[in-house]
Length: 482
Image (cartoon, rainbow, N blue to C red):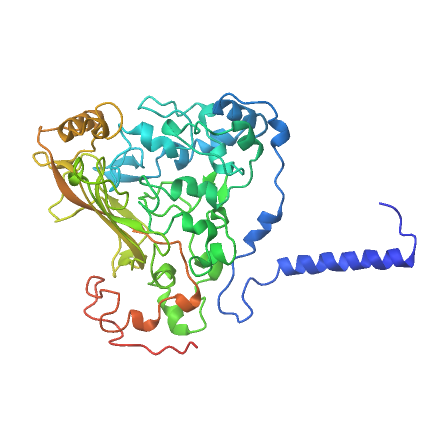
């Protein structure tokens, strides 16, 4: 730096220093709105202002395989693949459950669900969303670092897509995508999470592509504050925090977070509202409906599949998948939830309920760790063995799959064999139900639930199901909020 040679230069330097002090001061202010009511997260957007290294000079030549991209990434990011390979994005194991004194690892890799039923035997189609390359059968090598897919999370070109067995789509220019890598944005996460279960809005009711360009009424954090997923789902060594819909034992590594991490335990001016936060999840009041822009699948009846006389319509009927029902602006179902789920495990005998729980939120009014949470509740009918009284995940895609043969007997038989399950030779269809916590699509304060929407005759909470003899307030409540 040249020496200061004049009074004018000196004044200019002082001005620059004052400006820098003001910027630093602004970044370290108390993270609370001027009215003191709703705290704001601690400046997560500063990370977005840091320019990412332009990687295009490292990928000037054409690339013949996705593994070649990964090998080149690992020359600089030597530990990254090993880190990814410890996460649920790679292992597809995200929790565990204890049965008969034995800890059983759980994840989409080995569970039954209420949508496409099971990954097992259907790898080629399901692993489109695996964070790796080439998983096409039970012999996939989970130790091979070059099969880690760096691009699906870091593509900045907007041109990356995945196809069967997790391989890049045929039209993907790997050189362009590799040269565009960046910090993950919403569209990187959404490439899989928006279309979980086989299509847009199929699985989640609060995650779909409407969040890519959300306004503040749809999602305040993403629309008003421009949050990216990893601003809340903070990530260290590629381990993403915040998975909610799973089952953990005390020994399972799990990092969760809550609204109170940014907003404190008493975020309201009205003390009565603050009293609610001990037993009511923030999401219950601040996400009054889900699927507000795009519809979400609420029912799926596999027993209706195979009818060639019906016209295919992705929101009503598909010959390969059966009959569906979608809804928009859905009012959640409310239940006590302590952060743990009971889970149907492959091979479990079915209970005597009219609908069998694939998963079920644990908690009750008497559980001090439980809060009333909003859920999407999805209903289905799927194949089972009525003699052995177990659900049998059928083979849907690939050899012997229902989608090619349209033969349920064969698909169920093949599914039983590959899952190591007994099969009586008789199949039927049984009702199942699955719960998905609602935690995205937080709306503005003015659109949040009012007191009367819960505490009034015909309000949205079923007090008896929640363990109360009646509404605890016995009628409408007048709020002091203006």
